[in-house]
Structure formats: C-alpha cells, structure tokens
Image (tube, rainbow, N blue to C red; front, top):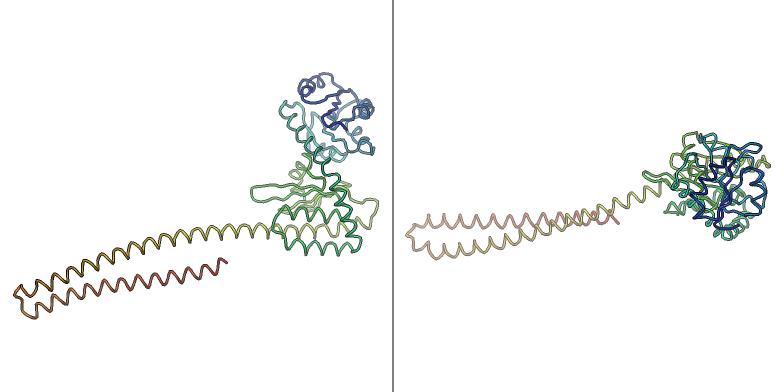
Length: 373
C-alpha cells in the first residue's frame, strides 16, 4: 500500500476533473470511471485511500466497497464515499459496508483536503499500531483463557475502581472487550467535551459522526453486525458481533449494558474527584489569601496599639509632672488620674480582644487544615 496514493472513482468526468484539480499537486492521484475499473485498478495502484462515488451504473459504490472489504487483500484500504446525498440512513449504509468517511457533493477544496488529511492520519496510526495491537491482543487472549467471561468482567470492575484518568478508563474498557474478541470504539461526554477512543487506534470520522447522530436513539441500537450502547456520558460501539455464535452473542447482549453502566459510574466518580480536587485547591487559595489579609490587619492593629501605648505613657508622665503644679485639690487630682487609668485600661482591653480574635482564627485555621488534608 503506497502511503500517499489516492484512487478516485466517479462515472462523471466533470467530477473527476474537479478532484484532479484539488488533489493532483498533493497526492499520487489515479482516476477511474466505474466500479469494475476500481476493482481492477486497486490491485495495480495499491492506494491508501479510495474516493468512491455512490451512484454509478452497473455497480454502485456500496457494492464496490462491500467487495473491497470482503477481500482480505483489499479490506484494509480506507474508503471515503462521495455522494450528492447525505441522510442518516445513507451514511449508516456507507458505514455498514465498511467506509471510514463520507463527503457530500458539492464540496470545497479545504473540506476535501481536510477530510483526506484526517483519513491519512488514521491510516498512518493503524500502521504504527498494528504490531502493538497484535501483541496486546495476544496478551489479552492468553490472560482471558484462564478465566470465565464473568470473571473477566469482575476483574474489569475491580480494576477500574483504582483508575483516576478517563483515558486510562477508556483503555481498560477496550482491553476488556478485546478479551472477548470484540473491536470497539468509545465516546466519553463531559460537560464541554467529547472524547473518542478506538481499539483501532483512532476513531474514523464516520464513527465520530455516528456517535453524535445515534446518541438519542435509545439504550441499544443494533445495525448488524454492530451494536451501539448509549448511556448519558458513555457510548460503546461494538463493530464485530459474533453472529455465527448465537450463545456468545446472547451473553454479550446480557452483559454489555452492565459493563457500560459501571464504566459510566466510574467516569462520574473520576469527574467528581477532579471537581472536588479543584474546589479544594480554590478553597486553599482563598483561605491563604484571607490569612494573609488577617495577618496584615493584625500587624496594623499591633502597630496602632504600640503607638497608642506610647502616647498614653507620654501623656501620663506629663500629667504626673504638671498636675501637682496646677493647684488642684486632692479629689480633682484623683479624678484626673482615674480618667487616665480608665482610658489606658480600655486600650489594654482592646489588646486582649485582639488576642482573642487571633486565637479564634488560629483554631479555625487548624480545623480547616485538618479538613483539607
């Protein structure tokens, strides 16, 4: 398979001319005008991506794609349908026969190039992951061979309780499903984000679109050999149900909702822990700010108290020097001395109140420190 080769298939010469004008400077582009010519040229050209018109005489694009995907030698070639129609039913039909994306005529240069760039990233990612996926699959099958299907599900439930990242949770679910020989894609929906994961490495654009289109189609949506399980935050798409094994198919249907349900609960737990962690951090920051402000206030009040104490001491010394010289009787002198003493005592009382406030704030700080551990 040539990494930069595109095969365009369309029975209308004008459409091929448009595709040539857009792509010939960027890709190794080959063009044919019918389904049979595509099936013949694909072995000669060995493309990475096929742009396949849907409506063609003799053999339409769906049939061409079906034959390509049924042939082991061409089944890995990425197919993007090109059609003037783009209803949900037609897109599902395209996905059913194995296409990875769908573009509706008329399209612009940037739209087509953008979709091709995405598809080539999918192709490259698949190549990089082939050996890794094979190794992971072998490991998973060897591990699962020693336990029952239910035991594997129990192991999965026990495992995810220790997971704190949604990416790790998605990979754990993929590995669990891989243990049953299932190819899967997953979508996690958080407040402002949709994240997709796939046992194939990267979700194709059509799978991403199907998640959005079918999110509200019920808890289970089947379009054989596929089944989509929808929960509020989690959707799981199984791409290869074992139709030739009715008993295993029944067990999968029985267990899949439970598996996705516990995954949803764990995702909620992960998001809640992160939210609480953020709230705790904000509380720490707010408390630190309040503490700094209080310490500044205490410093100002202490300075004010020291200044007041110095003023009162100076005033008291001045009274002691001058009152005897004023010719006052004893009662008058005692009255003035008492007034000065009362004022000083009130200042000392304010200092005691400040110390009480400081102690109360210290106790509050200690209590919050225990709560925030």
